[in-house]
Length: 285
Image (cartoon, rainbow, N blue to C red; front, side, top):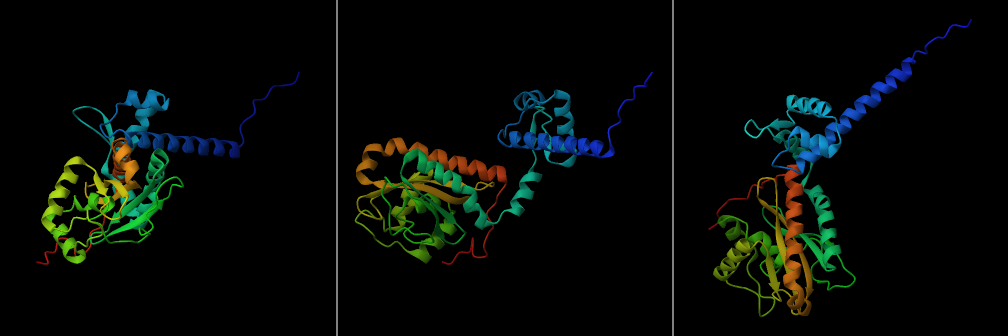
């Protein structure tokens, strides 16, 4: 009578199973981190396990590991889990200012697709505001004088005003000293006092408008983008013919604001903080 032998898994098969278990654990941990990053108010373990379809016990085990590693914190009052600042700090160091433009491009493209208007991204580097990206719409107006790297007329365009409105007093004064207030059309604001008053309205409303202030028959709608510390870092805007602006402007403003807020949330999750430059905060008066 033949004896039945139980087949013992080979060493290579056991090793492969261990690797698969490790990879699975890493994936689950990353999934938890991604979920927590979208819920800054925090989640409890049952909510996390339900959304990610994880066993509750497994979920607790991974959360405890992430807490010990310093990547997740548990609020002692609400008992909710949230990402710590450690992951944000790590990512912040790994991302350069130049990479931020690429990181924000999906929001530029999304706004263009939603509005069918040419969309722009400008960046504030602590001294200048320059045009960093353009996503053209074949159906819309393109402001030909606005080319990549353009850093003038920011007092007359929505992109620039969205950023200027959120600078502190010394930064704004220094910017105006450096760049002046050139007139481009009869609608351009060329008075420091009037511009500052106008920028207060921009800040209060959360968006900026260019009503034929840079180019006749062309209007723009813009909104600011902030870094993880709430400092203005960039702006996003659309341009459109004045006729369409007067007919559709009110319906397009929410799209611009939503895109700016989405970009701000993305930078907050990334933990990106704009590096300061030596000249910031210096009073030249």
